Image (tube, rainbow, N blue to C red; front, side, top):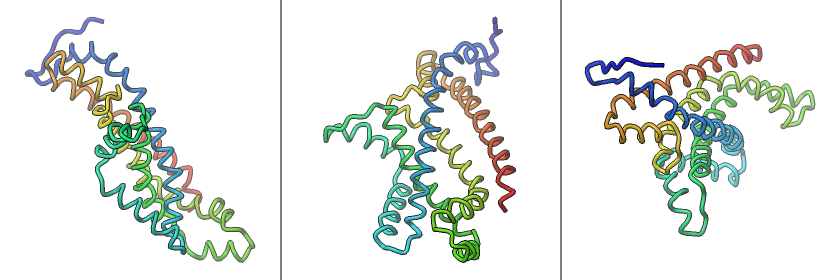
Length: 227
């Protein structure tokens, strides 16, 4: 398909953007892999951290607090550098993709833990007491009564966290992961037109986040029956 060259006053070259689109989209799979797997790790680990953070025993509560504080208080870029460039010093070598997944997964778990903790605490204590009076175990009460209600409350902030992960995957470019932004930088450096390429990649991230927002609406409707 032939595209006439428009540059919109030098800000955006339509022809260059169109011709570069297939190459840039070649990094989309890495962006999605990192985002989805890291979010999965964050959801699982975050729930355990939230429960440990609210536990009565100090042996669970304080390690969870320290972990959450450390991850929220340090830049994810620094953590990525530690995983990819620092661990080889002690003989542990990770691929760039693995380091990115682990880094974003462990980092997001801290934020998800606080979301989960606040969502769980928003469920009325009477729910726990009613479950105990019926002879339900802690695990059954959590799984069948409390979590469904807390999930509906947690969906909006969890969706925001997922969007943040998707956009933050652009930082994986600095450890050589060939995701969307790294592909964009290659073309920008080769064609000497950074503005066009950066606008292009922004227009790619935008619909991805729109799709996530649509999924949020669907999940909210599904879980609204638990409130």
